[in-house]
Image (cartoon, rainbow, N blue to C red; front, side, top):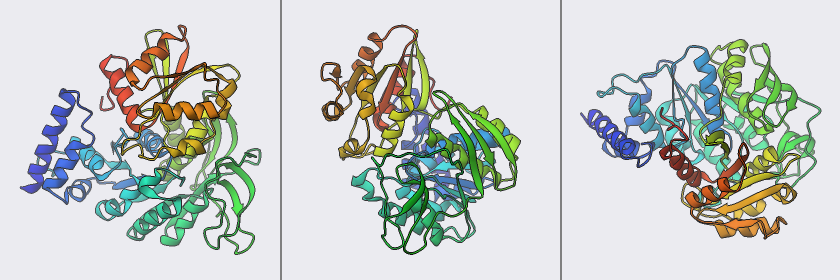
Length: 456
């Protein structure tokens, strides 16, 4: 009876949330259902015949989940996933309620792919008993919630201790993620094997020290931040050899070409429809998880080459005769890499929207640790918006962007209108928002008929 009531109330909340355009019903239905039945998450996930795949880490969760969903869909699997990026337990429950029968005896789908907030891992893992856990990377993110990244690693590590029979897929190129194999013996690794890649800058290196002894790590190659091929000169801790690899990488402004080698000893040359080195890691994480579900290299190739941008992550939206390009930013490394991905030979038009709501992180000092200086000579239209628009404007000034071209408009709707009005037909306005700003902007575009709701 309790399960039935939880699902019924959740479905009603979802219906009215969407009908009244008060959101997509991504959190409230699950919150109400959990109040009624604290075991509802475990009950609904137990119906999925091929189990649950959890994706966690700082950056790339949503994109990795989207890529993996597209791969498994190409393998004819019906996937249940929290595609909006609502990654607390209430978001998972909301997703499952949408696919559940009213009685809760059946959940429509073969496999669940859920991105989960790092701090929610300890709560979620024992409840859903995942078949596979993927950890993408660990960077400083929302210091007011997590603290430093060693604390985040500990949270995930303790969650992995509960996953006794779970295959744990770890990023070998991230020292903190690789170290998590100490918490679970079923660890396998993925990483990049391309000797032509190396980032000489050390601007936003989050983790220079060995997690075993504290000695500064030596890097044979460093791709960005602390990601690369590393070894400790003192205690011997080093990058493990990855079973799933990518090599022969070519990154272009709007696509990336890679050669993939899977743990099943299969190879595939793949064209990704998204740029950026971090998206190579997302594709590698997704393909690694898929290979452990006996998905073939050809199916992985088809799924990745036909994968579109995830919700608000490098999502291109046409507004009349102009374009918006949404790139969610939420921490220094993500901000830095997003800037790198959009800066080109020609000048760009950009709107940066900074909020400090709980879901964004209330401490916005992280913007000072991001490398936004490449924008100084590459921008034409620059708008700072959001609740903390003035903070963003000051950061842009210190990046030596001329104060004469920095426009401040805290109202996101007005800022979007200003940005679009100032660019010619056929041009693109790059929008870099934090999470709640992205949701607000996207909901606005849905209401105006330029974007579709994530549930359609």
